[in-house]
Length: 470
Image 1 (cartoon, rainbow, N blue to C red):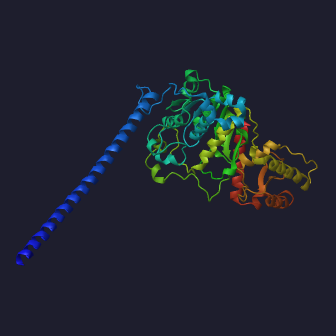
Image 2 (cartoon, helix red, strand yellow; image 1 turned 135 degrees about the horizontal axis):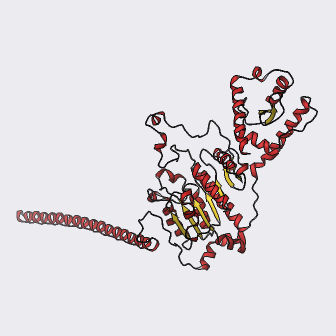
Image 3 (cartoon, rainbow, N blue to C red; image 1 turned 30 degrees about the vertical axis):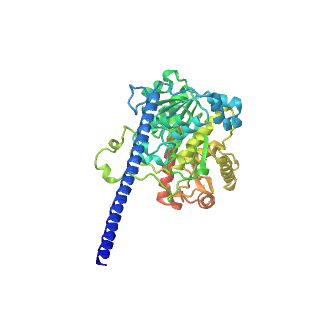
């Protein structure tokens, strides 16, 4: 009996030992299996990455000359052979919209885009998507992290490379048959001929998307004097209302400080009309974004101009809602496509502001009879109302700073109506001014505060300056 017990104990012990050995063996097998899977996955990822690196290298070699660094511009053709049948299929909706004849004109365009940031990148993208087969893009700058909120195609991998090379790389994936000439250079008047006409480009349209005033003025002057069709982008910074985006001649833009300064300076150069501008007529509001003043400690460091990357370029950050530059760019691209294809387009210049101007002029003429003048005719024309209201008085009453229900009024009763004796007021202010000053005999100094008098005189001084160029 004892022997049987001992034998059973040995068998049990043997079985337990065997079970432990099997468990260890299974555990080791599982570990080996996991390690094998990990090794296989790692090797697969490595092979895929090697393949992608090879493909990128091969693509770069096929599109970039070996003598050029990766971020430099190239002037060689990027156009690749492509099936005309596939091109027409890709552009089928545009053919249906603009017709065969219109699309032939669109595809034949040679367009130069100066400035490839928030606005310019959208212009280039939509022109290429719409069938334009030859474009030249010009910009000296690189893609920054902060520009990704508004750039048409740039992504995180593009940060630090030139904007033109970034744009070209992405657009060739959309339309590889397009000839994209990327110039990583700063446009200025010294290299204007090379960048606009170089390599026998012969532009059919130039797009101005520059945000530096002096360079912008030089480009617009250059194109206007050489009769090159040009369209200009106004300022998209601090704007947020898409319903206020408009297209008009430079002489008829509203609420756009950039266009206003350009208009005044170009008048000195003898250019008053003939430059279409995309702009926003959105009025400023103290509750909205605005260009913040440079911190005082920056002035203590020396000349503020030295803070800019390039001479004469802005040193402060402009608040930009990322959607607005895109809408400006889309509006410009649409304007070009409809213009060159002959598609009917009639922009409402000034959002029907001329009806408002006519009402203001009639109110001024009616004032003549209300104050006892026998002749209601005034030496102010309809276009002068636009000038006085928008440029001289900046769309606001100098008395209350209100910008609604505005009209014009004679300022001093003893002087004839002229640019130096007409003031923008609200209709209520006009009635009070007639009662107390024009009919009541009180002087403007007795009726209005010193601040109002000084502001009105300051506006008259502005007008005297502007009138040199009218």
